[in-house]
Amino acid sequence: MGGSPRAVHGNPLAKVVFAVAAILLAFAPPTVRAEGAAESYDFQICRGYFALCAASTCKPTGGQITVRTATGGTATFPEADCRCPVLLGPSIANLTGGNMQGSCEPPGPGQIWSTYQPRPNIPQAITNWVPTPPEAAAPPLFCPKSRNLGSQLANCFSFACDSQTYINNVPVVTCHCPIGESLAGTAVPPHTSFLTQAGQGDRAICADHPVSGPISLP
Image (tube, rainbow, N blue to C red; front, side, top):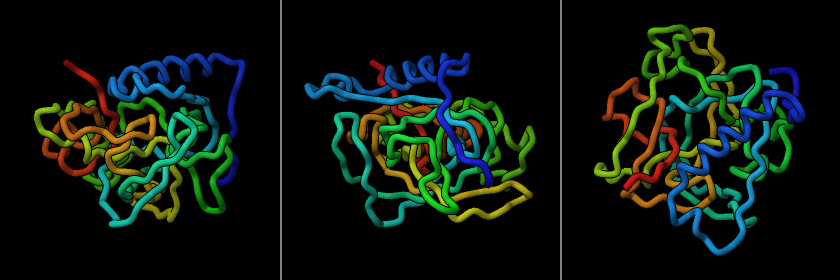
């Protein structure tokens, strides 16, 4: 995984950062957006190797993970391990979120960040990591609030990953992610809708700790 990721400023890709950032913030629950303390995000585009967990499901480790909050503090959540494919190219990160430390630089030797790049096809465990469609198809899946599973989603955005292996010639890493955490570092209520690219349309995946983002719907 040679080559260090770096932030990219002053080019057309930067427009993607702020467009996606606006979408991500719009998906945050009203209780998150309405907090009295000022919230701060630093969405940037990083280049290099990154983990894309958007179509992954996760397994709780029984441990805890510390996350950075949008108000400048930290919070602790149940931890899950999520296996995610490694890709190369531009990706979106929140340099002040997850457990990032203000830079696109890798978190440590043999480690990379889990960031985001919009893709319709993502290698995934349910199809044994085949890297091409139709096996790699990753359509959006809506998990409604009626299923009462919002607190069980996993948020891998801007978290560290390690333990690389190869499956079907696809590099796969393990990312360590919080369960039930919003983009702002606050708890997601159980009665919350969310979107994921895991499951290839199968709503049973909604209960399997999918990597996803909470959304607010009436």
